Amino acid sequence: MTQAPTRPTRTPRRKPVNGSHPRRHVGVLIIGSGFAGLGAAIRLVKDGRDDFLVIERGREVGGTWRDNTYPGAACDVPSHLYSYSFELNPTWSRSFSPQPEIQDYLRSVAAKYDVADKHLFDTEVTLARWDEATSRWLVDTTNGDFSADVLVGAVGALCEPNLPDIVGIENFEGEIFHSARWNHDADLAGKRVAIIGTGASAIQIGPAIAGTVGHLDVYQRTAPWVMPRHDRAYSGLESFAYKNVPLLQRAAREAIYWGREAYVLGFAFQPRILQAAQKVAERNIAKGIKADTADGAELRAKVTPDWQIGCKRILISNTWYPMLAQDNVDLVTDGIAEIRGNAIVSTDGTVREVDAIVVATGFHVTDSPTYQRIIGKDGRSLAQVWDEQGQQAYKGAAVAGFPNMLFVVGPNTGLGHSSMVYMIESHLNYLSSALKTMDQQRLATFEVTEAAQREFNENLQSRMGRTIWKTGGCASWYLDKHGNNTTLWPGFTFAFRQQTRRFDVAAYDTTERAGAVVPIAASA
Image 1 (spheres, rainbow, N blue to C red):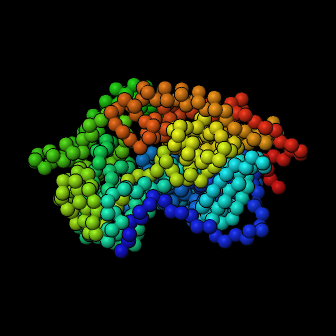
Image 2: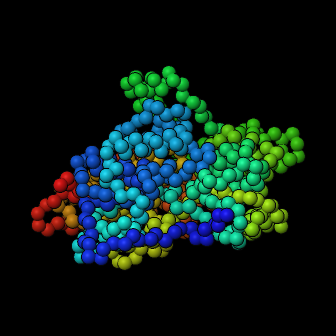
Image 3: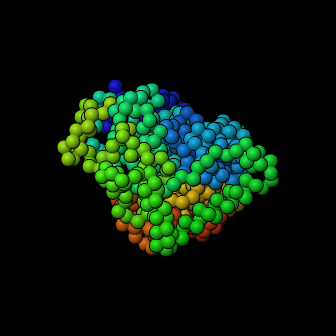
């Protein structure tokens, strides 16, 4: 029997540390080692910097691609665009990469650039606080304590599972787990299974398990728009050509990038352009669910959203709708009233017995528990600051009140159309430039001014007003509790790249270092 966790996060346990042992100091401390943190480590190496450390709570690199091992897990961005620009992969097996290949890719990149010894794995940050007296970050972990001149937050948005607050969930007697914490020891074959949620993970899990489970109930709160998935296997000839023909793969990557960038016109400038995409999604419904029976017509109605496409994340699948039409699958659109020892009770009073529950309810995006552990110069946590004023940063990287800290893909850097790796590399440019500026100008500290941060975010939210995310008639996880979209970038990604190309020190309050100049994170 597996009990449902009653709280969304675990409390990290510290390993015993000798109280007399001094903190280990590093020039740069990076939290997290997914695409962002691993990329930051490699960029520092490329810049000739050696004095840095990556704290990673998992057993290896990978982040969300290490953690999400559920059946059917795959990327919804084309393979050739979903990789580092400096390390293309000619051996992708498909046009949309499955999770194991992406994780293998990240492992291979970490090995090639020899950054494993710069990682502290199976280690969680319990507290990171700014110390004004030393102008350093003091970082406590489950595996020792550290200090750092610069703190880099590379904790991805999709890392903290969001568990539903449902009456009785803790009393369920069968298997229950979040999609991001898949229990591979649980045998679902022939069982009565429920999936709670119809987001990006659920639409991959459902079709992957529907053929082996006895019965599948899918609990839908809001119907998503689902576009066709133009996925196929690459032939041996194609793989050979990508590996051996100079610039061919880079040309393919560029073509995909600019094709994806065209979506921004509809998302951020003229939402009516997306009506053509909505027609394609409607045809996807019609293709997957036949309406020649009353049940088919009713199911079509249930899966058709009542908001404009693009307002929430657009999903892609060729198998979601056919799966919902299978005889052993039921789509439940009534809310969940409670969970009992062996059943889920919906708000209409129907009791549906289940042996296992898969919770596919997303992640803490705008309220990550990690933010509670980062304490700024005035003693308030990042969570407290953002709870009061909304989640915001300057260029998605710096936050007033938190000196010498930069995010890699922080607030308003998410995308609904293209590869986050592009945004990550844009922020790596900004980080690299910031460290060079510290060295060149002998800076001890930098802190974005409140005025610069306020002006940037007022302009950003003003531009957000014309986007589909504001005008599309839906509520989504893109929005924080203040009603602001603090998740997505409201424009072209190349515009973001231009804004973050160089560290604009004029937007920051700075102090100079005293004594001899020692480059930040320089080689010993």
